Length: 363
Image (cartoon, rainbow, N blue to C red; front, side):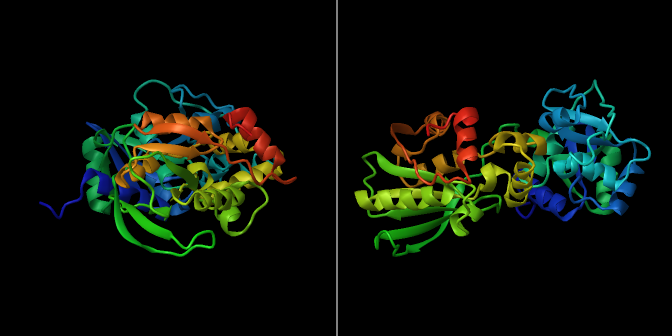
C-alpha cells in the first residue's frame, strides 16, 4: 500500500521519537531491542524500559575511553546498568559536562560477546537526531519486542534495511528565487530538501556559472554563532563572507550552505563542546569526550547538490585537503583548491592551530 511508510521514512520517524523522549524498537532479523535516548529519557520511561529486561547503556568508543569503560566491540561499549542506577547515573555517564566534578563514576561493567548491531544502530540514531550519542538498550527476542511495539504504538525500524554507510537521501529542489546580495545583485537562493523530510540545504549562486567549466565553489557548513552572531571563537563568519565576496569578484560561482552545524553534531552538542573547551580541552578533545568523531559531517550531500545543479568540475574554496578528497571520492573533479585564510583572532587562534595540527587544515 502506497500510504505505508518506507524504511527511510520509518527511520526519520524513529529519530523524531528519540528527540521527544519516546522509545523505539530496533530489529535485526530475529533479534530486537527497545531503545531510549539517554539525553531525553524520563525517569518513568526508564523504569518501564528496565522492567522489560537487562538494560545496557550504549556508548561510543570515544566516550568509553574517557570513562575508562571497556569497549569490547571496538567502536562502542555496552555498559550494563547497575541495579541502583537511575536517570541521574545515565545522564552523568552520557554527558561529560560534570566529568571533572565527578571523575570517578565507575567502575563500569561492559558486556562482551554476541552482536552489538542493535546498540550500534541505537547510537547512530541518537547521533542523527543531534542528541548525545548514548542510548539505553534492552535486547529482547523479536516477537516480544514486536508485541511491545504494537501495544505501545512504538516505531519499529529493521536495521537491515538501513546500510551502515547509507547514502544521504536524494535532495530535491523545492524553491528558488532571485536574491540581490550585498556582494552582488546577481544572487539566487535555491532550497533543497531531502526525501526523508530532514533538514534543508541551500545553494547560493551568483551570476551564471558555466556548466562546462570548473565552477568556483564553497561548501560552507552552517555556523549559527559565527555566521549570524559574529562569534570570535571560530573563523566561519569571515570565511562565509570572504567566499561570497570572492565569487562575486569573479562574476560567477556557487556557495552551498549545508545545515551541518558544529561539524555535524548539532548546535546543542556544539555548545556542550564549547563548555568543555572552557574547561581546557581543544575542539577535537571536546568532541571525543562527548562521544563524537572529530568531524561528523557528510559532504556527499554537497556533491549531490552540485551534480543536481549540473556541475562536474569544481574549484573548491577550502583549507581542508580532506574535503578535496571527499569531493573527488564522490565523483566530482576538483581541478583547484582555492585557499580561504581569513578570520584569525586571539580568541580562535588555539582552535585554528588545532584544526591545522589534528585535522590537517592548511592554515
